[in-house]
Length: 98
Image (cartoon, rainbow, N blue to C red; front, side, top):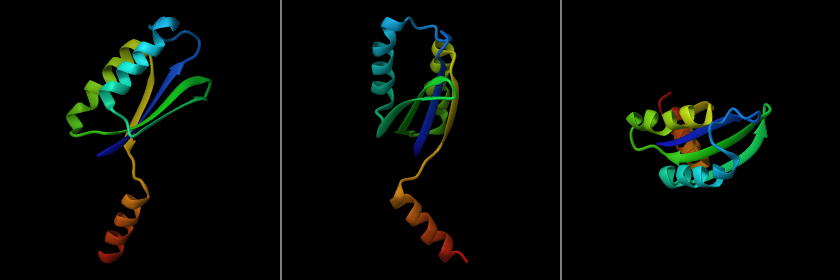
């Protein structure tokens, strides 16, 4: 299932990762998740990553999130996400169930 993982890291040094190790850690995260897309933006005064990836089974949630809680002191949200094709399919199914 396509998921949106939003990771927010405090900009005030909340991360346990030294600045010079950020590129390496980001690469590790991307290699693990193999995202469909990843975006980076400052939000709410924090460094923010929005990563769209395929989660094969829900039991992977702790595997994905726990290191980010521990290493990054991150605020994390994770939720299902749809693209336009998924939405159109769902709307058609919803209409057929009326």
